[in-house]
Image (cartoon, rainbow over the protein chains, first blue to last red):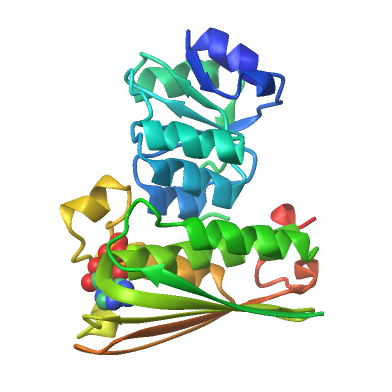
Length: 120
Length: 155
Ligand SMILES: Nc1ncnc2c1ncn2[C@@H]1O[C@H](COP(=O)(O)OP(=O)(O)O)[C@@H](O)[C@H]1O
Ligand SMILES: [Mg+2]
């Protein structure tokens, strides 16, 4: 599935990275804790989060995350948008809560970038 | 190949937190190191940079990269850590609300550094500062049956 499909499924607004909607997406990770993202998320996953500060983009950059989905109608701060544009990391915003966002994507074939911790 | 560079990190500057790690990641990529090496070095560097910003007045990150390994040294002038064993425990944190707002401060940083580095060393003196050294080996990790989880991220 492409990032554009993700956008449609989540009825999301594209805030950064309109030109990258063709990106292929297979896996995702949801967290509000950036240390958890650093511990467990895998390269080229989607990051679903309720955080909006620039550290979300930094974390995504460090891990080569494909795109950030801000849930619960959260919108990135101005600094966050600037950094995402500079680092070319797409940001989408959806009004769905994290549970619904994850569920809708999973139902459409996106899986977790890992299933469980401690089993790798 | 051998590359050395020292970066300074400002304590308390949450806006800039991560700039150094992004830059280091770019350098390592440019040097043509394997993706897994770059990724692990970037993660440990980022957690150590966040700690300098969160807990110290000022600090330095020293990068050394060669064909065998990437070394990241994070040294700071700050409060120091009274009980390193306790600080290393997942979940232990003295982070302020400001640190938690960034998505850090859940007590996972030092254990993430230890998890992703092949070699991890920490020493600290209360009232003086903290020194962390992390080494990421630049090997064909497929040769390492102890760490099968790395195989799928190595290209
Ligand atoms: N550079 C440092 N200077 C002083 N204290 C530190 C430093 N790094 C870590 N600490 C202490 O160790 C604790 C655990 O650190 P860490 O594992 O990175 O988790 P977190 O930063 O989320 O609290 C911190 O809350 C802090 O008390
Ligand atoms: Mg930390």
